[in-house]
Amino acid sequence: MAEVEVKDNDGKKKKGAQKKMKIHVDFTPMVDMNMLLITFFMLCTTMTESRTMDLVMPSKDAVTEEEQSKLKASEAITILLGDNDEVFYYLGEPNYKDYTSLMQSSLDPADPNGIRALLLERNEEVIGLVDEANKDFEAAQSEVKARRLSKSKTEEEINALMETRDEAVREAKKLKGAPMVVIKAKTSTTDNEYVNGPGATYESLVDVLDEMIVCSVGKYAVVDMTDGDLFLIGNFKTNGELAASSDFGAK
Image (cartoon, rainbow, N blue to C red; front, side, top):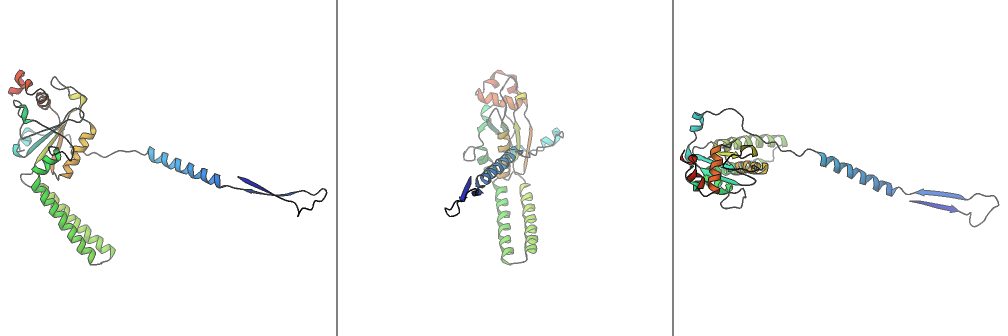
């Protein structure tokens, strides 16, 4: 780190003369040390930052039976998130007598029997309208950029096009006959005589909400799971034995 140079006056020594020394200190290792410390503290700061995701959930406002009855059975898809990563669904109204009315599925995008495949099929018309709105926006945006306007004018026109596109997407999602998805997630506190377990994972809930966006579903809600839903799951797992031995299946 340090070098010491000694001058001997061209080899001539004088009695009582002091040797002159020139000290050169190399601070390169100190610079390396400082860089390591800076990198370390930056990494620590990054790792301690909060890693959270905002999850928008439906309000807790009570929904009357009259409002619930407005939902047409032909448009309803109910997704049940069971213990761990279990995923089930049924169409229309629940059938407590027939266990085959409940279908087991998954949240794997590549699964041909998964939730995404189901929603893409049932919401095909809305998806087509949304894709058309996006294509119109991209074409109009290219035309604006080709006109070589000022930066502020270009941004102004593109923002207006985005608002038009977003309005078209909102209207498309209100299309009559579009599916209404009801999502019910099991928790460990909703165990009963039919089903017992740790409950659905938070990841499953996030994934199924992502599918609503991917598949352009405009009408969906997250509600509490009921005893009837747990009965459906239990009846499915026992191949209908619960319905045969319980009065619940007769309701």
